[in-house]
Amino acid sequence: MATLKGIPLDRVDWGHKNSHRTDVVFYSFPNSREPYAPDKQKRGYRVDGKCLPAEERSFGHWNTDPWELDYRGGGHTMMSGEVFLLPYYMGLYHGFIEEKK
Image (tube, rainbow, N blue to C red; front, side, top):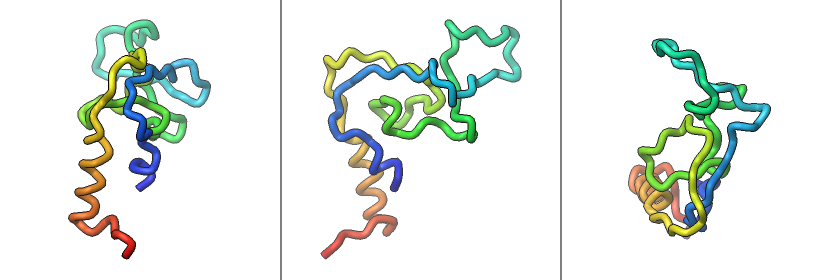
């Protein structure tokens, strides 16, 4: 429910930059042959081990990498509303969300 409440309902493709934050730990790749290079890999998570919440990132579909910190976007594209509608109606169908009558 926190994710549904946090998804911005204006579906404009705004850019987000979170790699400068002090509460973010950069993701290191254990099997990578190259050491971490901040200009190449902008992936990370909060100090509590969780990815950034939905209201602090931008994504157009559910197959977007949740560990990605920086998102390109210029505010010129309107994204689909299915990012909100799909989990909402699945929650209604499976009984996780109840309609008030």
